[in-house]
Length: 205
Length: 160
Image (cartoon, rainbow over all chains, first blue to last red):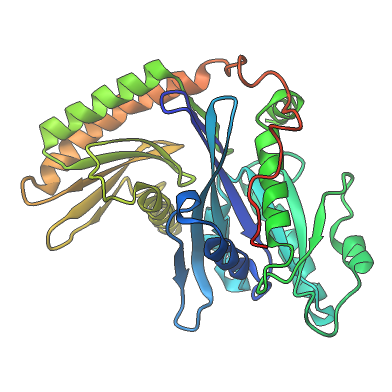
């Protein structure tokens, strides 16, 4: 969860990119890392296998605006999407202040998206948490590929909880939708610390 | 268990700094990092300017979480210490409480035994400070009002 430090006037947030294997979670972080100036980002760390599949997580710290005298910093993580890495996926999820669910828009990946979303909910339950308590957005990635499921269909399958959340079409490899996603989930995480958002979360916990 | 938010007030920070400074002096370790188990750096002392403390915090929390998960597979509640020995510098990570760990970096000027001895003492003291910080009502001054439009504007701009 967020760390608010009055001594150095900093608020740190943790944002986790979740989703099935090969959906483009790491591609999101690579694009952000490539585009942000050094002053706004730290080193990117990727714990990956020899064939570039995430085995534990990717990590990229980025800094943002100063709000009410506090510098805001966001630590971006990805989880390993492959089914067999659920134990590490659950560990990375610990303490998340915001989530991005990166879905693969291809028709033949719909089942993996649904299973990964259910896995996200199950892993949150391990921390006595739910998606009602953590700000999250959906990203429908790979919109540059053929055999795409329509966004309305993806919405019907993945964005069907009581409160619908923001969703973004993306092609993370080329950057489309990457910053819209990041800015929105960061803003939601930040807003949850202040005013009504904070009260609601406190009640939930 | 649900992870808890951490709000470090200035008086907490001063007490943590005092404890970590004492720990470094007694153990002769070079750097001490107090890390939230989610991977966020809470405080550090003695850190060399070149140390990428943010990345080390994320990796150390992950490594410690992994060993905790392995411990549970062996029927242990947790391995309370994680030790990595290098040719010049070594790393000792130990439990503070359910939400934090203490990482010490040291070299040939001391031994893992000394670090372990004083890390246990420092962890107990820091744990008390963190416990009090978490039990205190959350600050309201800066956080009472919702963000206005200017405060919640877009944070990063993609390249044009």
